[in-house]
Image 1 (cartoon, rainbow, N blue to C red):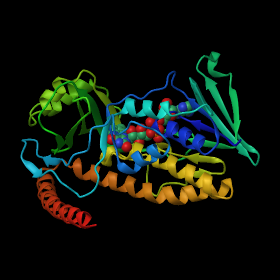
Image 2: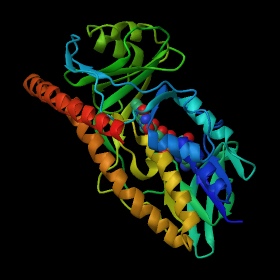
Image 3: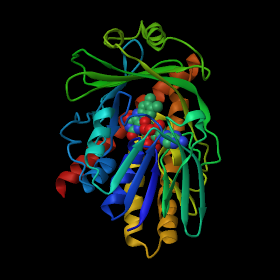
Image 4: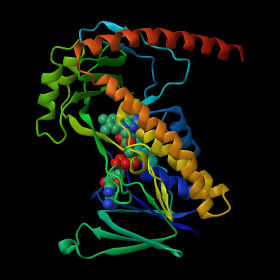
Length: 372
Ligand SMILES: Cc1cc2nc3c(=O)[nH]c(=O)nc-3n(C[C@H](O)[C@H](O)[C@H](O)COP(=O)(O)OP(=O)(O)OC[C@H]3O[C@@H](n4cnc5c(N)ncnc54)[C@H](O)[C@@H]3O)c2cc1C
């Protein structure tokens, strides 16, 4: 049986483990955190990623997710910039991030071993295979390595992957997320201001997942809840209420990787998820892309005549697609975080026009679909 080590048990890592197991591999997942799980709030799951999960028998994503809706865009005073758009395409569903992770972990079979509390420190390879050296959490002085060997290593260790040479770059803004324990009548949407944005969507249990961004240097200390309440206190309803009804606010400075992205494959080491293509969250596609990576990797491993061909096909398929997403996501962030009053007014005007055109295209697409 072929063997793989997956480094990192985030959404990308556990999906890779399911995917490899389904095509007959024996998998060991090494995770530095003491326990499995995901922090975070809501997450959008696009149809492509939901399809990959369904293919691997990860059930329940649709059952536990709120259906995606056409949402509009507003100014901070509540005036509409773009009405709720029906783009004529299937929208993402919204699910709690911890629940998504749990559903994937529940689908893991007996051929997957998960070791938490192991920080991978070194990876070396030769023609025979790959050796991974990890430091167990309880190792005194961090000097007692544990060694693991396999045919393949999947680096799903996130944006600061130890298996990628390039450094992440800061986007210029920080993001806040939370879940508000309150029912509101509005379905959701985004509001763009000057150097700050706010968005929200309903989860299946009726609570509201919200996210916000603020232009700010990286690494500034602060109280995330107090900072976000202060920044959005005079924005339209229900934004102040959502913040008031949120107990825990998460904050992440937003980084991505420079394009062109560097190769996802180095011999028997393959990058997946944020380790390969960390993107800003503006398209809500980072985790979805990690899931799609896992689907593509498994397909090429099944279909290619040998490992080298499979990995080269994986890189050839996934690098161009995700490079485009990294670029588009960054461009949307740059537009959304503009803080010059004149530029923001011009942006909002253009987005209003673009929204109308997109809505017309969506209606046409629906009519064409109904004819088929
Ligand atoms: C504000 C925000 C909103 C987002 N919204 C969405 C959304 O709606 N939809 C979407 O698809 N994406 C979204 N994303 C992106 C998404 O969160 C990431 O793309 C996704 O979590 C990446 O998953 P991953 O498994 O590749 O990496 P990670 O989630 O970073 O997991 C990496 C794992 O590796 C472990 N690890 C790291 N180093 C080591 C080591 N040396 N040894 C062992 N273990 C290690 C870590 O502990 C971690 O568990 C959002 C991101 C942000 C910041």
